[in-house]
Image 1 (tube, rainbow, N blue to C red):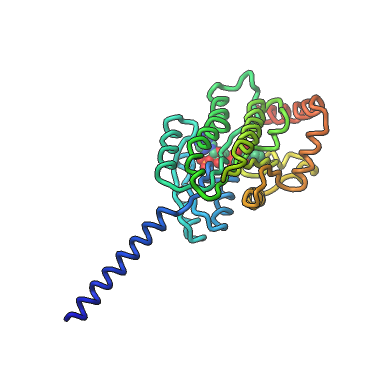
Image 2: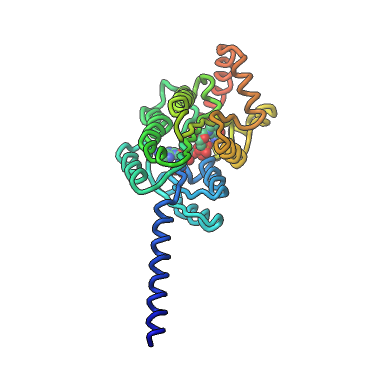
Length: 292
Ligand SMILES: NC(=O)c1ccc[n+]([C@@H]2O[C@H](COP(=O)([O-])OP(=O)(O)OC[C@H]3O[C@@H](n4cnc5c(N)ncnc54)[C@H](OP(=O)(O)O)[C@@H]3O)[C@@H](O)[C@H]2O)c1
């Protein structure tokens, strides 16, 4: 009888210890936040981080089936995956997300991936279209970075990865706002890198060239000549290069040899020449869009 009682109490004690350990582990669990995670480069970054055994918080627009992706990744890699459906261009939703993330989670990596662009004739582009690019590519990225910085600073080592573009390095007629927004991301990331250099937070910026991430971009890529096509990398390769470089402490990432070559060419050639070349090819693209 006494022995049975002892066994019962012992089992209860073991269970309590197990629960306490689980609570402590949950409290200390570290997460990587990825915006624009439901598709394209963001989805590849999610798989890559999961393969590195990082728990994830995936952010996506509502209605993109992010719940299914979160479950799939969690099962494949045996990691914890949370998700939030948020329109990052909506100030109220963005602030609510920042409140939730900064209060409820330990975060040691923030990947600002969500970004939009496109070809447009600036004179006739709608104000909503222009606003969306600025709100997503610039405002959301800056807000998330500033609001999550206190959480990142609490960790032993933390990372911010901002996804810019090769377009950061040169103006492009008929894209106007997109390259300007990516030039902002480059400048912001480099300034913040220097500001935080002596802290635990590394700020990196990545400059991918073209990637076939969505039907529109894929169609555009197919119309390019062989030389330009040779600069195209898959989103999976870009994600692998980005995460490997960030974890190795690199603060500027230009994926692929052809990407690095393109960077050198953009730096060497006169801006007027590049403007003329881009104007010709992007005007052609704009005409094709209008004709479709
Ligand atoms: N594709 C390229 O050739 C290329 C080249 C250089 C740089 N980049 C950059 O790489 C990043 C990813 O591009 P991608 O081509 O993979 O993306 P994409 O297929 O064009 O999709 C747009 C991305 O932005 C997110 N997004 C759009 N509106 C949003 C909103 N209101 N709130 C929250 N998220 C929103 C989407 O997230 P959800 O679908 O998850 O909601 C999606 O991840 C971008 O910053 C882009 O500028 C792309």
